[in-house]
Length: 389
Length: 235
Image (cartoon, rainbow over all chains, first blue to last red):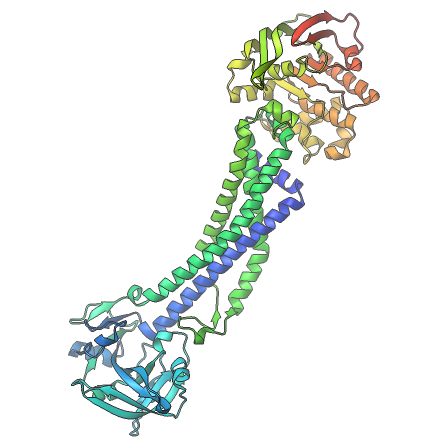
């Protein structure tokens, strides 16, 4: 093996420009795979972190009737909080949220919205709703930037909302926008109006009722009677699907890049075996078995990947360190319906790097072996004459 | 000097398929070579010289008949055994030198030893000895592309001799050399033959080579037409 490696590197470096062209393309594929996956992993980490901070907490307890995808369940999906739960909410380990369907009428237009009653003093989520606690006779509301843009609302604007109370009776009230927040989680923003929990409970005549409870880090894991626990896998299901889809889509480009590099190596191997028949014959005449010669050519092709890894590391490491520091700005995150920060900080894990190196080395070795098998069928006498076609 | 047979060939037939028929390169040929011979296979193109060398060197196998090299039957050797036979006991010299272009002179000569279990120091000494025999110790770092044809063939001789083989098979070794270089390398080989008792077998139709041979075997249409000892070969 050492002999094969030594010979392989001698031959590769002796081949000059052709080697470096192959190595460059392969190293580009190598760096691109790590870069793209690092971006997706960075997005995944940030997205999860933001969603946990703004929307899900470390998990949620749902009223059994509640279905976030079915607006018709909202009216009935709330329940009375037990004393045990109220104790947890008072100590800020659980945040109760009451969800109500409503219609808003900004500038005379009608807009279907979700009213969310929330504890203004919450600490579990990052929603800036403390302004809802002011007690000056005005019903304040907080909305996100997406909602503000959709409804053309700004801080200080008054907005008429209409809802049906627990008895199904329509009621209406004017609220005032006290704050417009900016966040990267569309689920905490799109079509939603945050009111004080107490105000919404009073509007609905549903004292001490909630639709779901958000658990904070300090909440001790246990079951709550009459409430169904939803873990992060469930709550982040949509986001995880998006990440998987992006990874799958990206892998097509990566495979394409890798294929170009592998085809170049394959082509080089085929040409090399054709042009170096006399050398192959000489190896055999000097006492190598044909399989040893196959080994030399396979290692030689596979060694492209080792050189590509070294070359890729030379320009990839500084590039990745730089991107990891400054991030990559997309500037469109707020306008999209997926959790995407304006600046993504790629994340390059050891696992990602090692698996990419293995992928490149193994695939380069396989495509090097395929044409090299021809050597095992060569007659040394024909090889020495360079007669094979 | 006591001689003993190191190559025995009995009723050797080698044929190659040509279209639907076959071409008989060696036709029921029987020969023997003894240790220390400086012999040549001569004859026109297509007479079977190179084919016979290839079979003796276990690069090819007989279609029929028996070829014993150092008491081993060539047709019964496995790939690994024939590789070992070539690696340890047989040296090759080719018309086109067949040096490995990316290696320098030292590495080309050393290559044959890399397959044997030798320490780096032993290899270095053996290579330098071989290069001294052929007068190329000054060029150890040169690549083949920097050498003349004569120098390349001397490197090839050193490579074939470095492992001290019993047999050296030289296929038209002077065909690409001028007269002066041809005589130089022939004298080098003759010296090695005398000093190390290595058996040299040439395939040639070069008159210059024939002057040095102490046995000339003429082949014609795959058969031995003449086999004669030379009384007073050139030294």
